[in-house]
Amino acid sequence: MSLRFLTAGETHGPQLTTIIEGLPSNMKIDFDALNFQLHRRQKGYGRGRRMQIEKDTAQILGGVRHGYTTGAPVALVVENKDWTHWRNIMNVEPIEGNDEAKRRVHRPRPGHADLNGGLKYNLKDLRNVLERSSARETTVRVAVGAIARQFLEQFGVKVAGQVIRIGEIEAPPHNLPIDELIERTEASSVRVVDAETEKKMEAYIDQIKQEGDSIGGVVECIIEGLPVGLGSHVQYDRKLDGRIAQGVMSINAFKGVEVGIGFEAGELRGSQVHDEIMYSEERGYYRATNRLGGFEGGMTNGMPIVVRGVMKPIPTLYKPLQSVDIDTKEPFTAQVERSDACAVPAASVVMEHVVTWEVAKAFLEKFGGDSMEEIHANYQNYLKQLESY
Image (cartoon, rainbow, N blue to C red; front, side):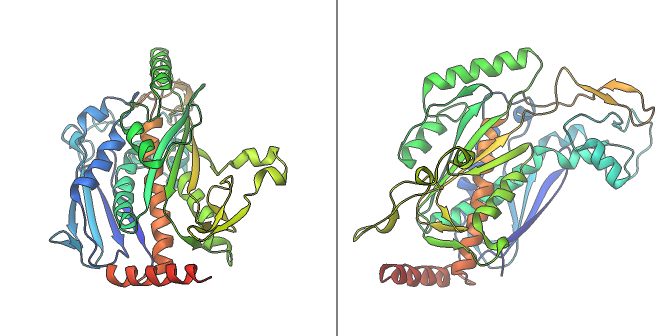
């Protein structure tokens, strides 16, 4: 069975809901680790007041018994604490009152889904678009990815994320071991490894906020410990790097993705891009470098996966851009909704879990079984095959 999930819920509704199908039985679920990942998403310098309201905690309502998956679909919800202030406005039942009472939105915000969604679904209240298109939905995507992360960790896989750039401030390159990278970024308010860059980024975010503006950046995900051969070269839609790219581009506000050196490859010669193949008794086949970010031919090559994503500045501004009222067709400054000046550190956490989900899907496709015991056996047999090649 293929691993998949669906999400439902609005940013100011009672809860966010997801159902995960395809998890094997007998997988241990660490609830503290799951909620830890949700808390990581809420941290980060530049976040708005919403993060002071919400204290995200996942509740699993089905598919897990006594701490272990049963093989049935897993139902998971995250409650919205802010729902108490929106109970009437977001009620599923009809309510009495004028547009003001219903908090109707008729002035679309540039850069958001508001106008396109209203036109597509013929919705005259754009709140019905913005409530669902909000990045609040990434809460349950992180929860889903956190469960996928726990699955991969049982096979020795490690996942890390970091911020590479916020606006004009770029973090210096480094070659830290993944465990040290995780430790340092967890201690940083902007998810970088050095204190000097952290201070510069904090000051820069403060400046942007004072100007009533927002700022984006670049984030990176690294995954170590994967075997050769996840994904496939035989069909376009089975190439794992392509599936990861689609996943990253589906994250709110992400406008670009690259694997390894990515777009830099367009500036270099072939001899400067491709990774030479090496062999040793201890490591087997490996690459002398990792410019291709752990992929060749749409398949993992045993080197660390390195993926970067570009997040645009959040389009909700406290000095709004011009828009057009859908009722009067007259120009207005766009509707202001509560938002963040910079969500790049949080986006790093979201991207970690989106990439992890795609990798877990490919892992299960390669070594799939109905139980963890079956998957472990399949995995060990494959490792023996690689050793004898």
